[in-house]
Image (cartoon, rainbow, N blue to C red; front, side):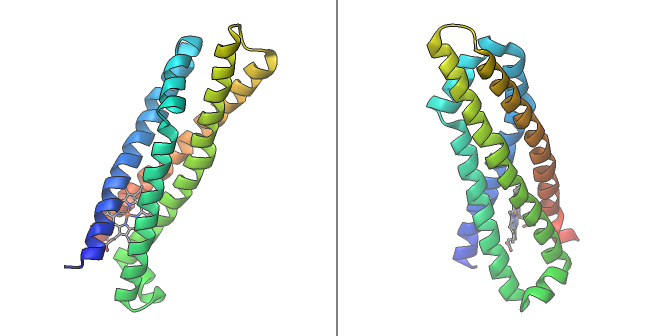
Length: 173
Ligand code: HEM
């Protein structure tokens, strides 16, 4: 038993589970529900993303998964005797494809979803503090951010699910 790999695996698989589950729920249900509810949903989103920092939590578990994954990838490469034998083995190829997809998903998830959600919630909080309806500029900013979040969210979920399929099946390739 290799205790370092054991610990990395625990961080990796627990992190990946929390990341993918949370991202799916946020993109598929929480975001569309908040959009439909509009101003009624705003306090919920402000509490969730500003006070409870939900986007930072998803970013953290995504980074833990990706970092632990690449560390294990390098250890495995050493065990297979170098880059070429590793990425041309069925197990190594599946993990490399899954790893690259998940890393791209993490990048889009953090920049295109998480950061934009925080900007959106910040604007919604400004509107709430003003006590009135949003100005035209605030309205169009929120509209633009919502569209960006929805677009990146869909790409993110597709990539992350493909990555999970590759990871889950890697040892049977
Ligand atoms: C969507 C995010 C991810 C999830 C849910 C996930 C899940 C998993 C699971 C369940 C396993 C165990 C597979 C098995 O034992 O048959 C695994 C293994 C592995 N994953 Fe990921 N993974 C993700 C992202 C990544 C990334 C970004 C990398 C970076 C290269 C990576 C690299 C690896 C490696 C190298 C292993 C094999 C570790 C070993 O030799 O024990 N994974 N992953």
